Every structure is written in C-alpha cells, then in structure tokens.
Image 1 (cartoon, rainbow, N blue to C red):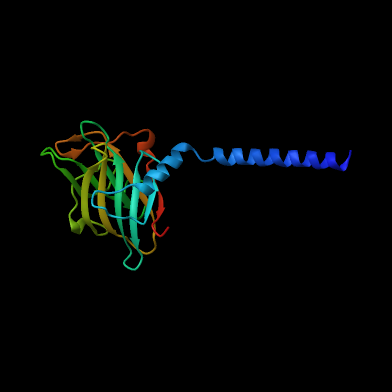
Image 2: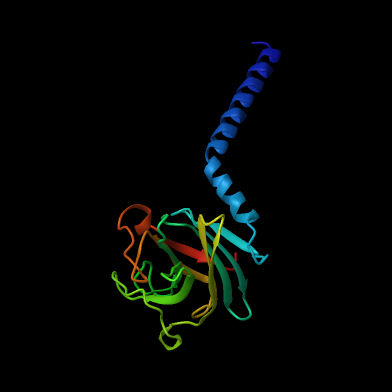
Length: 208
C-alpha cells in the first residue's frame, strides 16, 4: 500500500476515534445535570444573600447553598426544596455527626403553620418515628442559630436558613434532607418510605 494511502487510513481512524470519544464524553453529562448546576449557581435570594458554594443534591430536587467559615468552624446554609404539596407539607435539612442515616440527625424543619405563617426550628431525629417537635437549645448536640424560612419561586419552593456550629473537627459530614406532604395539628407528618425519600442522604465537605 502506498504511503499516502496509509496516511489517509490512519487519519480516518483517528478522526473516528476522536468522534467516538467526544460522543461518549458528552453522554456522561445529562441536560438535567447541567440545568441543575446552572440553577444552583445562578439562584438569587430575597435578601440578596450571597453563598460561596452550592450543591444540587441528587434526591428530591433540592439544593444546598452554604458559606463555610473555617476559623470558627461554622457554616451558614440555605436549603431549597420544592413545595411538597399544594396543601402544604414540610421540608428539612440536617447533619448526622455520628451516623449515616436519619436516626441521630439534628435537623432544621420548616412548614406552614395553621395560623398561616411559615415556621422553622431545630428538631432532633432520635428514631424512625421522631416527634418533630422543636428542640430546646440545651437539647441540641451542636448550636444552631439564625433559623428562618421563606417561600420562593411564587410559592413553589421553600427555603430554610440556618447557621450551624459544626460538631467536632474537620469539614466533612453526613447530611440528610427530606420533605413530607402533610402537616397534622401543626406537626410534620411522616414522609414516604419509598423511593428518593429513603435515599436522601450523603456526605458533604463544606471546605470544597
């Protein structure tokens, strides 16, 4: 075979390889992932609060924005979650300093009270059937302050704010997030026990 033919064949093979590589690489990034990342970074808050970091969480369509202060070992968070139901519902985000699931989590929960206001407070998830009652400061494993909540996106989303004094040392923790479709007598009712509602936990490093 002539040298020119060899060169032509090699060039064609290289072009095909590059095309296949580009196709495979592109397929690993879904439009949904790109959209979630864009929404996470470009979101603005009613108070114009700015957060240095954000993460589009992999379950329940939720997002966590945060500012980590290494010197004080604190993190200020804004947790965004779709409104669970037209009738109300509740959302929550928290840290589990000693475990990997729900039990042992100290969370901040928010829901619409029967008086019409949106309330938020820290609560302890000590079992698979927690009371979801407000926890007194003395009961908390680590301090939580600046707790607040609001609606966003014309009522389609709830946002929960808090500043957490991180327990122990380091910046990597198990965090848990959740949403439920109903509130009974101003107490968040049990969330679904299938699908994303039982998979909404992960590890986060606030320093990244």
